[in-house]
Structure formats: structure tokens, C-alpha cells
Image (cartoon, rainbow, N blue to C red; front, side, top):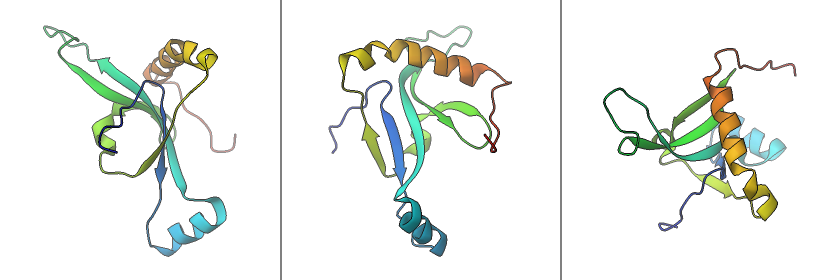
Length: 117
């Protein structure tokens, strides 16, 4: 699908096709999906002396380890993913609010979660 275009707040899910015994058992018990992240769209990077119009990067929002991060989509190039997209108009109206809250959460150094939750 060379012409597939991601849209903001698309949900991407890694597909685990590894051949090691752990991955095989995990797929058998829990299915082929591994990690979930959200495509944020192209976000401008603010840097003194540079315009964010020129310096924008496609970004992902994800929870990796014990916190949340915004990172470049290029960190996930070459990985097999399934894309899930919001379809209803009511959900699409929430996209700006979801994006704003994700940025706030990723910008807060106190945002982390506990594995026992």
C-alpha cells in the first residue's frame, strides 16, 4: 500500500511476526499484536530562529515503558503495523482535543503509570 496516507489520530498497532519461542507463545496466547501508538500528524518543532512551518515532523504518541512520549514516525519505519481509523463524524470532531491532551500528557514530566494499575 504505497499510496496509503496516515491521518491525525490514526491508531497504529505493531504486528509481531518474530520466530523466537517467546513470540510464538505470546501470539498463540494473546494474538499477533504487540504495541499500540497514535499518529499525531505533522507537528511543528519550535526552535529559536526557525519557522515551525518549515521544520515540522510526523510524530507518534506512545506509552513505552513507564511513561508517555512524542517521537518521530521515522523511529517506526520498516515495522509492520495495522492502522485503525476513526470513522464516525462524532469521533472525528474530538481529534483536536485528543491531540491537545496527548501533547499535554507527553510534556508533563510527572506523567507515568504503574504496572499494578
